[in-house]
Length: 160
Length: 107
Image 1 (cartoon, rainbow over the protein chains, first blue to last red):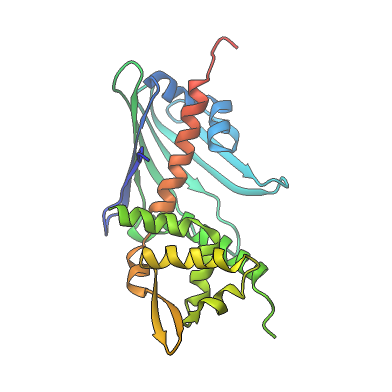
Image 2: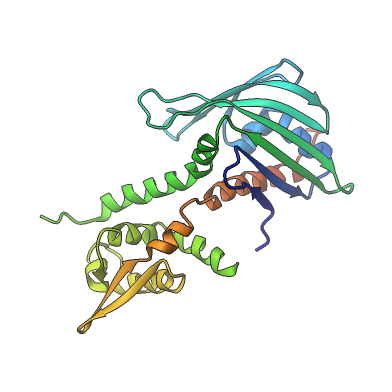
């Protein structure tokens, strides 16, 4: 299977680059980032606020199947050029008492016309430190391991 | 390169991750590993085979028993995992693509 999404994360750097080629005209790709109901669909989150303009701000909130809020994020928009570029900040709300602390990150989103039916997205994300970048990179893996661990606890028979 | 992909495919399965967690502290026989799961023994054997093939597990013979233990070097190699992170974004972007292909502004 072709790997459409590529991640470039060099050792010791506090940034990463995500690139993805889409079989979509650039205008549709851009729209997926700017219309609240579309963002909600593909990000699987509730969009509380999305002001697509310089100095605008955005706010997302994700709930689990039971309706408990599991994830909140927000930021401000610094640059907004239709079908070309969005520069914004992204920050996850920290869970009180959680061992993992997040800090704000800076995101440069570039939308590129390739052909009339294809486009390219480049997300350049800059973190405050290498450690914070690596923490974010490992998060989905850690969640996978936690799930496996919970499952293990469910299936491991009592040993005593 | 293909091998690397195999490692992540091997790790994508929750039962196989559970097996790795089980043998992380000490080596175990296939029977001992299988006794921790409700899954049929041949299914566990298949998982062990996959984990061994991609070198996440290693075997050593002790008398008539074969013990499985974790390949620490291999685990370390994949420890700074970005694959699940990549998959997360890939899934999201696939969804975006599907939604936008069906997008009808007239509606």
